[in-house]
Image (cartoon, rainbow, N blue to C red; front, side, top):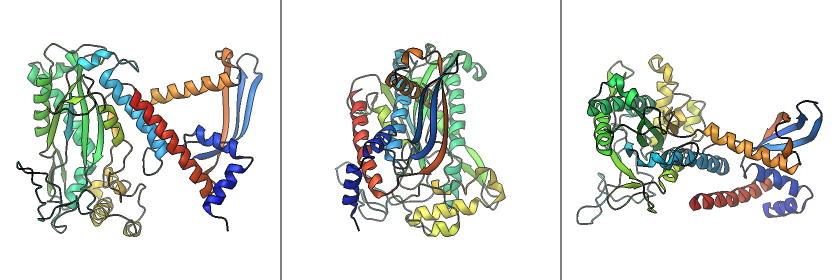
Length: 446
């Protein structure tokens, strides 16, 4: 029986290795590529003549954005997210003018309320001493108890899951209230706000240790046409700050508990608002608490590829209560998953589809969202990448000068997913790590 190292060496020495490696490079080292079989033909538009033909088996990336599922595809997703966020911050690219960096902007974090005391790291006192948790112990960063309830029997699991399921609605209402508050503080009618200004934002969700999301958002005030239009004279950082605080304090969503008792869902008490300054600082935050642009886009984008941020949360949907019982998760997260599964069977929550999102602890929203005019889109970025690769291919086969007179016809069918064996997977993982390091270095140099 050959060892893994011997099987890897046999693959490297085989006659098919070069072609296999080219396929892996083509998908960026994807850990579970989709194997397709078929052909691509390049036809002349007028005559219909076949100018180029390629057939056989190819790989295409799985496209999973989760770092725990596919580091290579999640790194590509993070790079796209970085450009989406960065374009709305500094402009000068992706059709966004550089003048957006002079607009009133804020980096806002809104959090979930408390559903019961949990194990935590309170920080340090004024004298520099570490403050113990409510359990009277000091928790290190890797302590699995962090985020779990001090008293699981009294923790409001139903309320926490229902809040999680409505977090996206709560954010949507927050943006509506924020526009109203901006109009109120500017002294104009609410219904006239869109005639004067536009609220643009990019938002990412991050799971806390206790299994509940909070949202990091970049808010920006534009003119009525968006980033190309200067904001009105009354728009400034102070007005945006006051409006955010007022909107966060008043927004709410009303639902019911399983027994029919009303449940009011709001943001938590912790609200963080930082102004964004256009400067070349190397850090996200300066000593005065101001946020710089230099690394903020990367800071936001990294959360788009994470799951719950907890190491033991499942990456895929659960299928049954028995499945939940066998998950390698903490007792706290297992209880949240069980609660979501049970609530999913209640007719009052059918529209929430909680069983589908039980593995996400009830969270149903997208991890990265933005307003329409904040910046470019993922579709546009991926379209640019496809166009670039097509131009590369046409140059390689000598058809670049025929770009306006040709059409490409693809006919591919699914064969399988993943690599043939652990030797291929091991080599592909090494290639992916090397490519990811190169991409990250390139992003740091931008």
